[in-house]
Figure 1 (cartoon, rainbow, N blue to C red):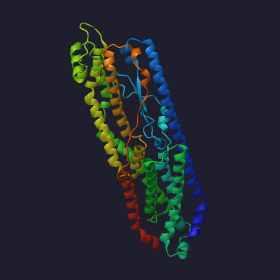
Figure 2 (tube, helix red, strand yellow):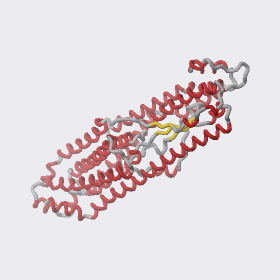
Figure 3 (tube, one colour):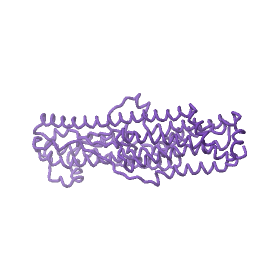
Figure 4 (spheres, rainbow, N blue to C red):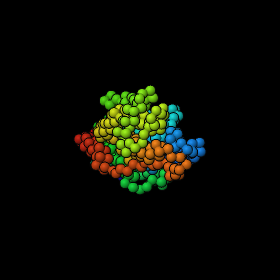
Length: 450
């Protein structure tokens, strides 16, 4: 009986169409993922050359005034792209991977990013995570929605019952054939991805694979539960598609809407405005209060002075720039706290819904989520502060630009180091599988009597 079921499955055109569609969609997503990584690496190489050329040009134009040179000169920090980002692009298409800043006011520079094609952003990225989370469940539904109902509607159910006394086992074999074939295709895609995209076989890659297998297993468990009701083919399809829409469309939209409602972020714009006002309004005010606040912020720079009666000095100018950041500190910190709360809300809510959880986990493993962007912004603050403290004494001492070893100021890199919390990664999916299989067990008598 099992041999006949296997032959029947592989002779069916629909089976091959479904499996091949997963394979070709997956291969296409790997190709686009490779293009994304290639573009990111090219941008990094261009940024390296650009910074070198800008430094050489600025030194040539401002050989004596290092303050004027550093007014213009920008230094880059790269948010290193994980190889897994080729499988899950996440927010890397809209969040800058390279941030270039000068040592002036930081807050308004944080949110500068290159413009992208709005049509491309509207379409989105066809990455592997999209194929896994959205496309493969539809193929699973197409392959499995009529496992029992096609027998009844075709008039062969009575014949099937007469040939075996284990109808539940027969249905299980039919489902396992589709489950095993889908996992084989998925495993093949992940193996190809490892070599084609040069993904190291580390802990995160193993977690990515296990989450992918668990997510596919969850959808087969959902199908097993739905078909256990012995509904008609049309009703099975309707119920399964409704579940797909609920988990993959309605739930993510609801989570996003809830985050915007519970944690609105007017501080995003307010931080920039407050930062600009913080230094622009200092032009027409007494210089002494600004300098005093600056020295209070950096007591190690108290030895430097603003020339008495002078209308301008780099000491006063950069003190004024620092006031822009200081006066926007409250808004900037509140913005970061709200981002952290949004991350926590999405993570905790996603634990209840396997599709949302899977997408968040894949983004986290690939370092392309909101948490990575927040960590990068904090690294940018440290990078900017380090540059300030290095160059302030040179500017205030009025050293010549030509005395600096500019070849040491190359493009800096930030690489996020994080482990894998296996419990948080796999538990929601395993619970989802368990709940669906447990619910299907209550209907097992139907396999024998209907």
